[in-house]
Image 1 (cartoon, helix red, strand yellow):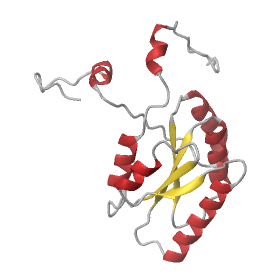
Image 2 (cartoon, one colour):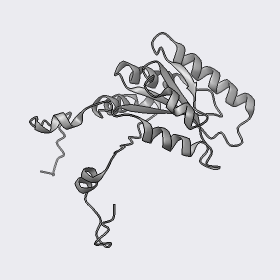
Image 3 (cartoon, one colour):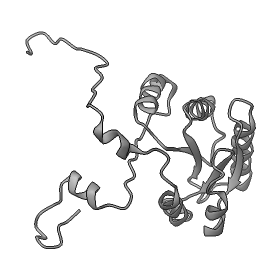
Image 4 (cartoon, one colour):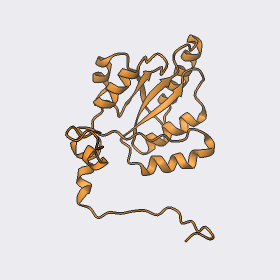
Length: 185
């Protein structure tokens, strides 16, 4: 985001957006059941094209993982499964986690087939088939394993929505809640 002519000046978000080939917005939504309402609000209002469902490889997925998958699929958001913390993870624990996630993906309410991404060719293979496939990438932030594949996957994903068509529409802002704090006007 630095201006090449005036290196001491940061570019505005608008300038970056106009010059960028691709913009990826990441929204970190809550995974805990206590915050499910907030997560639902984030998924429904974010106009997301894709969702990364992060699963700790060292522990079997919870019922909340199933809720998040179901929520994304219900709103037509294609999912990518990212197993995290694979460094030092016992093989039996990782196998159990994968088996459980794959079972969730095959459930009738999700209806996806897991597709493991092991190299760049696998990324090319699954493009165009994301309505029926759920790419699965195993990563480690400690060793960096799988991070390059994840970045390549994100860069390869096609645009799904034509946001440019919305530029001519009148602006609309939805007010979800109104708060009145005594002493503050």
